[in-house]
Length: 217
Picture 1 (cartoon, one colour):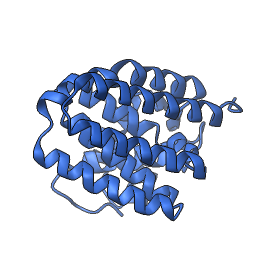
Picture 2 (cartoon, rainbow, N blue to C red):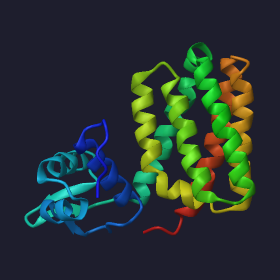
Picture 3 (cartoon, one colour):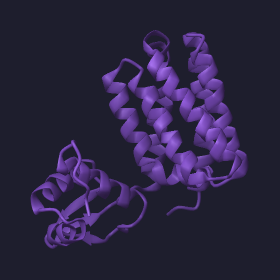
Picture 4 (spheres, rainbow, N blue to C red):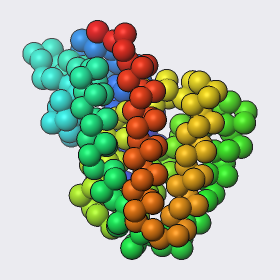
């Protein structure tokens, strides 16, 4: 059942369906229908139709006679999204150096503190959720609406593989340490160092994710 919030109902439905597709609740090749989703989520067909249209535009589902076929995210999609992050994420370094607010810094510090706490407990899911929050704040503080939108959506779509990559004690601690290092560097306002740390974090994350999907079809 969808909970009514201030954002549009169609956006809420979209987020739920996106999450469920990325996490494999709806399998590749499965047919989902407006009527079935309406019953499952407890909302009318209109917001579901709007959400499915967005998912279709993002090529996560495909229109079929009986409904919408789930396409999901392939190995090639993951590789391409990692390349997008590799190309774009370092580009926000200068924007962060110039635009990062005191409130943004405070929020990043709180997130890193929580990550350190949960990484010590090997709570992969909590660390992953906090990882998403950390990057969302980074992108939002970069001063670039274009980079922020592309990177936030890409990072979100990598959710399942990011979680898999963190199911490793070494990587979960390494990732948290890299966030702490980046947080400390952000305090200096040094764009060159910020860019270097972003690239370090990206390469380590990319390497772990690529290992995790190496056996995908």
